Length: 428
Image (cartoon, rainbow, N blue to C red; front, top):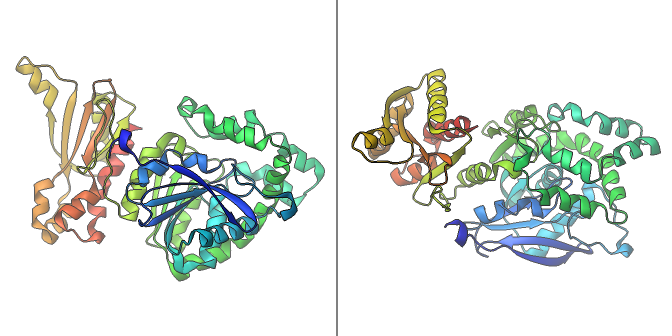
């Protein structure tokens, strides 16, 4: 699958709970379902780049929550905008679509909505991906101070103080918070959010939900009980610079689900705006999908088991970062092959291209004992290279691909999954 053959996303409406729910969908109708629940101030539009990156292997469905996006609620419905109501509507939405098994991908407001759905229908949830979707008090950052004040004193004055930020300027600031390079954020995202919020009455809906968020915090112990009782496979993938839901909230999942996977990205709250490829790869690996392909001018290609991360540095700088990371982790660098340098010695020219070969016998030996053929692909390798457009990439064998290629037991996947973290950190 290359960029020009990604599955097409279609848009639909369906009646559920007296609401005309707008949703986006892509992927085979008989494939495992991934249900994407968005957060504030967004809509299913926030998943526009993630949906096609999952839809070759999954039926991906992303509804707009009531009060957001293009979901419509008749005035006579007298809808109460609370998180209990959002969850109830989404539960009936899944019933209307006949969804009986699905993985949940939750973000921000989507987390308390999705966790309520999971508690109501625990037998339906196959896995949870929480991307900056909090469920623990220690995950609430200092940025919540004005909203906590509103919870404690829900006066008109405190309500108006929050209202002042619910505009285009405020939305742009929210998206840029915690992100080193805000120019990476496409303006369509926060501009659409602000335009939809500017509809008559919508700001009041958002203020009602801000006030009701206090009830999510009160419900945290019930979420924890659900986690402990049902132990759903869980991936917490987090923008580590999120001022609202701080890293402690991601780590806390391991308290109730010891097998939870926690991964941090060098970005803020709206991690999909800057790290959609990394999130898609982590989600696919977690859910068990094979590696996807990417295409583009000289860009990375997958589907053959190769994963590529974009680096913000030159080839030499990326290599040096990798060498330093390997040394700090006590991993042996067996060889550094300078392909472009060797080519130059023969009078040939090629863009900078260097291969690092590294490993640790404590990690590699159990792999070879389980499947001797994996030695063909060990030690681990990362190729750092520059494409024809001058972009630099770090490429490596996808751990899940190696697992499937050699029939490795899943519990040994962590022995080779370190390569993903190494490539991501070197490119930051």
